[in-house]
Image (cartoon, rainbow, N blue to C red):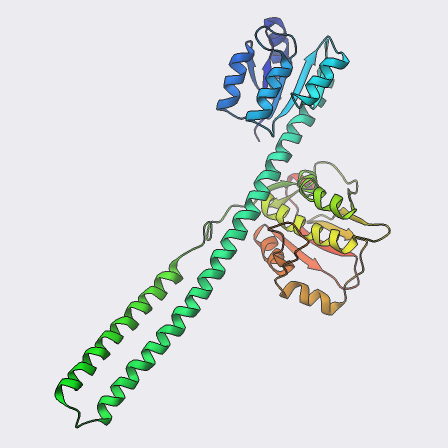
Length: 373
């Protein structure tokens, strides 16, 4: 596993030496003395955390954070200063989008906590962006697949009609033995042209069937998914819908270090769909809540998505998995149906279960080696 990358900007060499001695084994540290060089570096490569001193020649830390906010908006920005005042803090928050402050002299333990939290937040935001793009890409692929199916259907019908016309013309020739030679020759040419059209349409059908939607057929190996990171990601992307409908989203406490086998973006997409169904079910209730709960045994991790809406009947459970829902109250790209979510969960290494008279949905995953320790 790679170390989080930290860009540390400080014009005092002694501070850089101390920082590197303390943290070079925990983070991928890049040291820069000139903030102008740091600004240029931010244009060239991504980092997980920007840690910068406030008072430096040429550019303040707040000004550098403002540059980082523009070129890497997902990057967490941390300001180090020995001159904390309300004016600096206000500018740091409003102009630089600074998420944390570190006062001089800093302690190694406090710095580790700050950098770990900042790198986690950066990763969560980037995963959320990737998840949204994945949902959009899959929605586009589904639209292409639907258009392909319609095209196949239309071409097939047309080919059948042309083929039937060819047979009718051939039958007409056999039923008219006294037909003049020039007319018979003209009908034969028409039949030959129609046969050519049918052959071309059959070739087109084969070509369309061979076409694949973007990304279709690509397989990704299952990896290790950190369960806490997965649930925090799902909560992050689902919060806007929760606020819109007045529904609280919560994660119940569970053991640290828990992981399972799967594909993080696939599983996050499944869970975010299920959570948003739960939000719509719980909206208007008292209380209005959706809760993520984790249960484990020696082999499996079960993620329960519990909502305070009315439980479903057995018939409703079956329909939910069969129908391709499209609910206009959801944000674009969500209406993929629980049936598709179930198949996507299986691809991602899990199993999606919807039980009648139960207050939610269960996603089961195979526990990984690290998670079973």
